[in-house]
Amino acid sequence: MNTTLKITRIGNSAGIVLPREVLARLRVGPGDALHLTEAPDGVRLTAHDPDFAATMALAEEIMREDRNILRELAK
Image 1 (cartoon, helix red, strand yellow):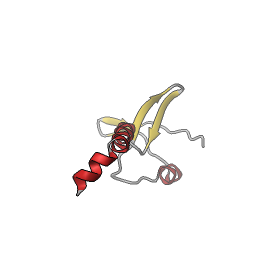
Image 2 (tube, rainbow, N blue to C red):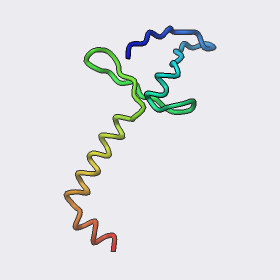
Image 3 (cartoon, helix red, strand yellow):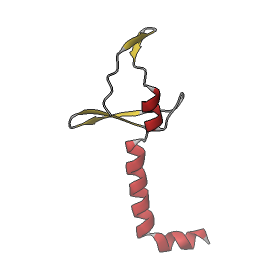
Image 4 (cartoon, rainbow, N blue to C red):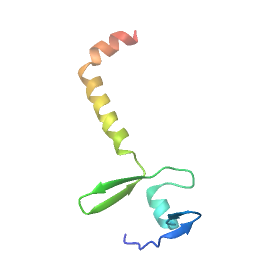
């Protein structure tokens, strides 16, 4: 999907309006947060938080390694 967006003035700031198709593809709507990250070819706009994903991956690794301890603590 290639979409050209125009920067518009919103009060004292600038912003872009995302087309309905882009919102549907991202599965977001008014009030949702989007995350802008740097990519090798520019920037990436996503609905998921890359920092949260990395934290969850680390938590899953710890839970996998210590599953017996966690099982005992849950009793």
